[in-house]
Image (tube, rainbow, N blue to C red; front, side, top):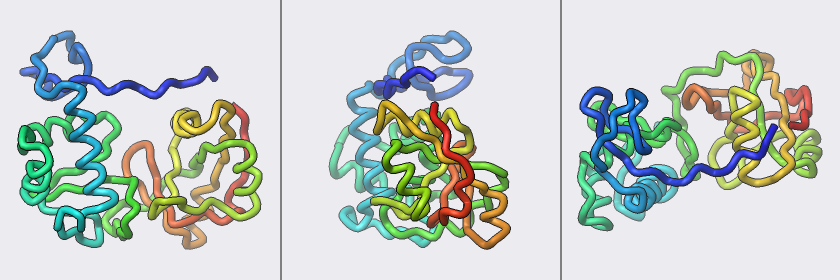
Length: 218
């Protein structure tokens, strides 16, 4: 498979029919007005991601064990850093995010994955996939076959639901990715907690080596 480049940040625009989207045109072909330019999208995204994943206490926000914080409190915290920000721009960023990084519900917001702060995420569904995939480099892959997959600088191991997604993640770190295939079905049956963050990402506290069943080059 060819090398995948990291996508550049895009403007957020508004389609009157389909709502917020990123890029020049909505999927319907409509060219909407710019709601948030790409520079501010990056600034706002970095700050919101940092607060919800890594340092809520720095902004005096209370986070519960499932990663939720009060949305209005987050808006006030963001406005202290960027006076131009408001609740609608934050919502535009959330609703136009095709990677599903955030969840907004009943006046609360959280990051779906990527936490370094300790969160239980007890309301996530249990993984129902038979196989999951983890992309890495060759040297690291051989080490993981021996010791298993454990989180590094994050609260959970992030696994992909498809080979293509795991390759995409791996290519951010290496030009020659190795994909490890995980027997998720057996792991869950044996009591390993694996949960679904979204359609493409599953989370586990660790994956013991016995559940890594195949190593693939892509």
